[in-house]
Structures are given as structure tokens and as C-alpha cells.
Length: 357
Image (cartoon, rainbow, N blue to C red; front, top):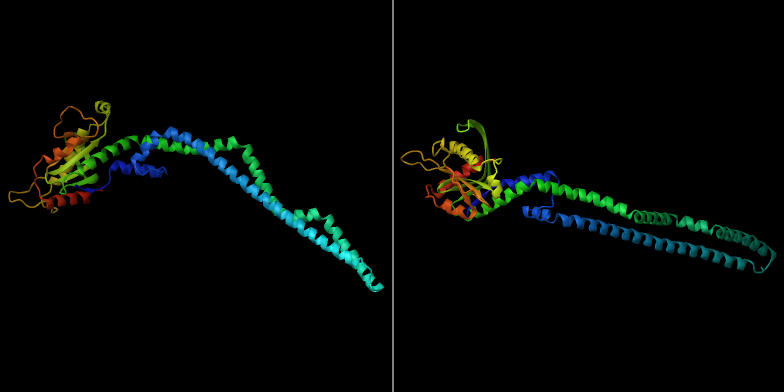
């Protein structure tokens, strides 16, 4: 099985965009596609969820108000019972003091005490409601607030649900807009992933570098287009005993193939091949210890070009570029005779990996 190095570039860009937009709900392109396909259902479900959450919250508020009401009733009854108990004890005391005494002195003292206890009883009886309100004030305040909140929540049901749904829908719509913008990347990621999976089936001597990227310290002059090349970016760079394969993946429909406004992958890969060929073959074969010395001289490292088409491919043939579908890819690569040994393949791969930024 092919040794793999690096992550698919489209996947990295998708993850970067999602992170930048604060979206963490997706773990794969499959999750994104599933979201887009079920968007209308999710929008409908969002409304029912908002409505259901409102009802649950109202139920919780009503439950809390009911509990506070029960607590208030219990507390009020306890206070009333304590007050009635005190009045009852005062009545008993007054009854005792009203009985005839043994002598006039004691009777006089009892009379004064009786007047005091009657005064206390009178005050308790007259201020009973006030005392009850004072001792249940905090609990009653909590109950009133809870009932007011329940009432306000119930009256404004539609308004609250609409506002909450609007906020949640705005977030859902934002996610959809971001995902819609990612569609070309998703299509690319699916295609690149299929190609990478296919290349994994090659022998253990092969090394696959996904998303090879290199910024050149000195730009390379490309005479064919009279331009300079400042960087190299390759979907898949495959190192085998037969040499290096530049593989560009296109997940295009038949209509896309016929469009003139899309950049030609053939021209793109020619340009990339030239820059990589200059870098790898402008040095002696053993400059970085990549290839073993040959007694005839420096060996040339062949670089071949492949455009891997996931869906459709053009009927035309192109110079120096093989356009292959997935089921043709590995057979084409394995067709070439081996030129290097396993050690040299590792050396070439290690050099390319060290360049990859």
C-alpha cells in the first residue's frame, strides 16, 4: 500500500473557512452535503424545535410558580399556626389569672398581669395579618415575580417564538450560505479524496504527497508563456520507482469540460512540470543524496503528467499529459518500467517532503 504524506488541500481550505466562520458542526464533506440536502427539513424542524423549547420553558416556569405557591401556602399556614398558638397560650394564661386569688395582694398582681397579657393578645390579634405578611414577604415576592413572568411569557407566546426562530434561522442560513460557497471546494475534495484512495492501492514502494506546495526563492522563467513561476502547487505528487508523477484532479461535469472560461488543467500541469523538472534536474543526481551515482553520468529524474478526471474526460489527446479516469489511473502508472530502487524512491520523497511548505 502506498505511503501517504499530507492532507488534501481542498479539505484544509474547507476546514479553514469553517473555523474562520465559527462553524464546528461538520466533521467531513459528507456531513456538509447531508446538511445541504436536508436544509429545508432542518428549517422546518427548527421552527418546531423553537416552539417545543418555548413550551418546555413555559412549563418549567409554571412548575416553579406552582412550587413557590405551595411553599408560600405552607409558610403562611405555619406562621398563622404559630400566631394562633401564642394567642391560645395567652388565653390560657389570662384564664388562670382571672381565677380568685388567696389574698388581695396576689389578686392585684394577677390583675396587672392579666391586663398586660390581654394587651399583648389584643396587639397580636389586631396585627396578625401584618405579622403574617412580614414573615412571608420574601417568599411572596418570589411568587409574584414568578407569576408575572409566567403571565408575560404566556401572553407574548407568538412574539417570543418568532424572535427566537428568527435568530436561530439567521444562524442556520449563515451556515448554508457558507456551505454553498464551499461547493466547488467540496467537489474538489471529493475528487481528490477518490484519487488519493485509488493511489493508496499501489505498491509499498510508492510515496504519495498530497497538496505539495512550494514557494520559490528565485522565480523560474517559463519561456513558453514568457512569464515567471513563483510557486508550485500540486494536488498529488507521486514518487515511484519509475519516477515522479504530477497528478491534478478535476471533478468536472461534461458541461465544465466544454467551457472556455475554466483554466486548462493541461496548461496548468505543463507549467508545474517545467518548474519541478528544473528544480529536480538542474542539480547533479547525488546533490542531495537522492540517486545513486551511475558510471555513465548524472541520471535524469523523469516527471510525468496526469490529469485525473473523476466524472467525465475529454475525448481529445494532449501532448505530454495523460488524461485518465479513476479506473485507468493505477494501470497507467504501473505501465512504466522501474528506474530506481526503494532507497532512491525514499530519498526523492524525503527531498520533496522537505521542500513542501
